[in-house]
Amino acid sequence: MNITDTAIADVKIIHPRVFADARGFLLESFSLQRYRQALGLPELVFVQDNHSRSHQGVLRGLHFQRHQPQGKLVQCVRGAVFDVAVDIRPHSPSYGQWVGTVLSEDNQAQMWIPPGLAHGFAVLSSVADCLYKCTDYYHPQSEDCLIWNDPAIGINWPLTRPQLSAKDAQGKTLAALAAAQ
Ligand SMILES: Cc1cn([C@H]2C[C@H](O)[C@@H](COP(=O)(O)OP(=O)(O)O[C@H]3O[C@@H](C)C(=O)[C@@H](O)[C@H]3O)O2)c(=O)[nH]c1=O
Image (cartoon, rainbow, N blue to C red; front, side):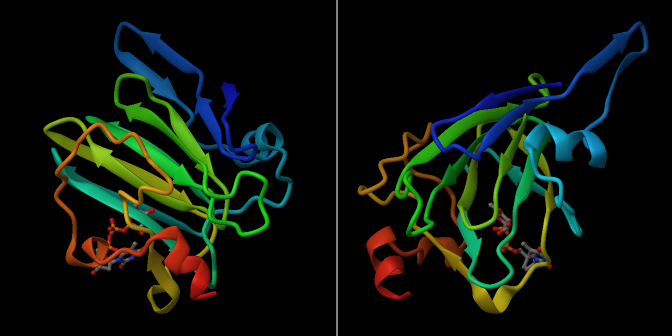
């Protein structure tokens, strides 16, 4: 497996080793010992796996939980998405920065997003199935949403008029989130 650094020091792009043969392929999408070592996180544990399906033009995010912050290992096993992490940790040197990458059934890449960041993705294909592992449980009471198009962050999304959930359309700017802390 191959791990690439990003502009946010602890956000990583992972390319699992793919074993292809005449039947198709096999890859290990997660292995506790190996991912702990590769990410330099000896305590890493995932307690919940999510699967979401979305249609072209959908944008989910940018989500985080104030309590029980979730680290996420995200992959797209059908179609393609533009996956984004935003550093909203107040004391981080990369506060306010974002990283984005295409995760797709073709590139088989994964993005590791540590706890405390906001996460979202936009769907590039007609349908996209995303699977992601979470280091903590869903905690809707403390869930919050950074608005996808906050000009102070300036994410270069590959779409201009996404389909959002009602909740995500009410997302807050980074400044509003900071003021609420
Ligand atoms: C996230 C989540 C949702 N749900 C339920 C609540 C709701 O009825 C339905 C849809 O929830 P949402 O609209 O919040 O789903 P969605 O907008 O896909 O939320 C997800 O977005 C991506 C970007 C993330 O990073 C995830 O952590 C999560 O926040 O599923 C769970 O039961 N467990 C979960 O872990």
